[in-house]
Length: 263
Image (tube, rainbow, N blue to C red; front, top):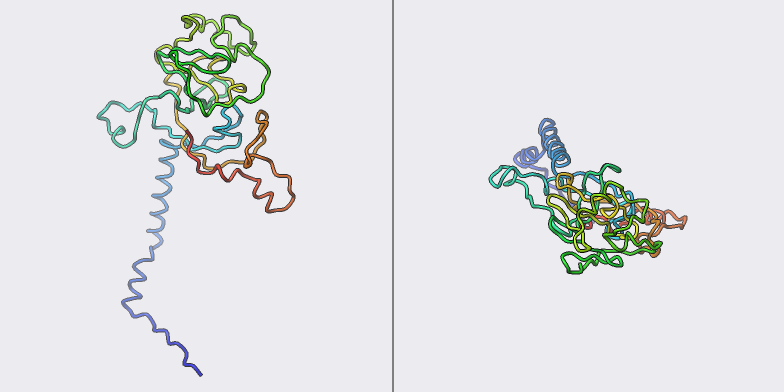
């Protein structure tokens, strides 16, 4: 018969070392409090969750995507030597950026910057030209839609679409030079990536610099939601109809989109 293995009891010194690694209740509370404070700071001053409600940014952003946006990257920095600039990075808005900005209805929108101050914008058959050069836009989607001369050929000189804001129409006529829209100082021209299904600067006007508040960083979760404009949806963007629990769990969210960087 084999002899049972003897397990040596811990020595007093080993017990004391174990006790050193176990935090007391006040220490644990202090650690939790620090975590909460840091999280509140990030959510208040740096990051903010944002839900995509419409198809206007397909396929870059889908209905049901939850984003974390950086609220500091475009914030005023107070000068090159300010403490905030040393702690958090700042930069100006650039053509191609996806940005979140204030808008009358709804109060926040997310679109892509296509024109910056001084740019000459023209759209011909849906293709964007900036300063005489056609933009390379691999992110742009053109889902089927009824023909719309104003949407596809911009700027127009004839009021043909009832969805155009009348005030913007009058302002736009003053900004047209040689068939191109010239973006004035302090303003930006925005388009949705889903070009045929986006209400954007073509219809309601330019966005002032002070209205731009954030830049999307990452998709932290994505609920499976149907699209009203996407005819051929990606494999992870289809609603599942299998009644099995595993299939329903798999179809609950677009798992492949979680933690995708937004660009």
